[in-house]
Image (cartoon, rainbow, N blue to C red; front, top):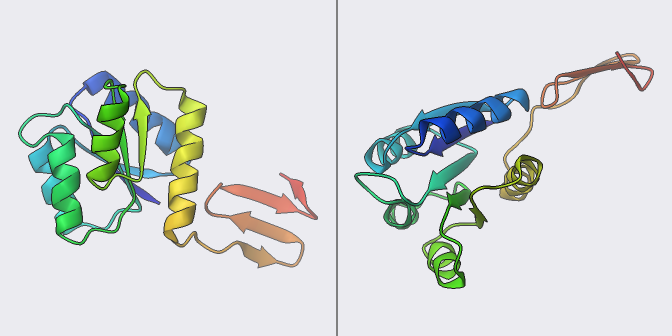
Length: 148
């Protein structure tokens, strides 16, 4: 699964990219809205994680532009803005979900899995040979239903 992460905070982007990679997501990062727009227009992603307070094109405007371009990729907004008004603006701009920073990493990962699952992004099929199975989405190998 491919994720576009658009965040100008190097520490947050690095932590998120590492966490997503640990769950076998391929992460492409952009440090501003213009770079995020170009990447989203030119490459296919299964999910976009988007900060609101980014330079060049803010996250709300970028979300609107992507939806106006017909992008169906799920968008999860990550932001320090926590008022109900901010959440409503973000969701009405076309975001599929909204999380306030600082966030709980396990909750974020659960939301990522839910968005990808609902979007119909196809996970690679489990490969089976007799009792041996390999699941590319989790990198787990089992034999006779026991994890190796």
